[in-house]
Image (cartoon, rainbow, N blue to C red; front, side, top):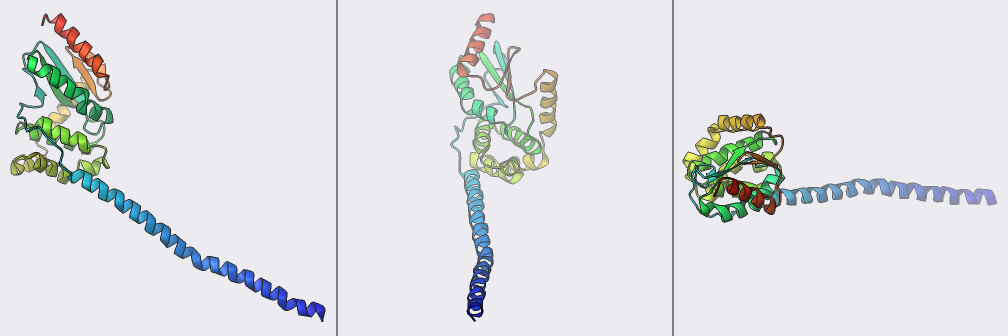
Length: 240
């Protein structure tokens, strides 16, 4: 009898375990949906921040320049840059050392700086390069370039440099949107972009950014002091 009286206790205990296990199984989908919801919120937040960043205006100078260069074409020192708008080091140079070079040497009339394309990131940055030259048609290459580099890295290249985004940036800069948008949609300067890439390859360019200062090759976003030393040495050699 004692043993039989213990049997219900054992059964009850087993039932309790079964109930506990059943409770965990019932709760699992709830936990899963909570996790899925949290991930969705985080992803949505990231996308929202990217969109806001893409739509946030970038301060521009409003300067009108010729083509994709600055300084007189007959300057004794010529700097040629091969770059890609999706390249992190190109961005670093453009927003820092490049601006320092322009500020220090453009007004001297002794230095010419030309920006050329060398596409390493793919179709998206090729479209961005084309858009840059479309902006150059209206004398706003450098302002548009600043916008592209400020947007670069804020999201996936295929999103940041999508044609719709590129046209939006043109509106932010204040371009004639009808003319600019047609140029972007038609890929008007894609043959020139490819030609510049081929030219860079022929000159031994393998990475971006790569610079030639009167023929002297410099790879990477070197410190400003290095660029300045090379420019000053070229000026001295040219007798300027």
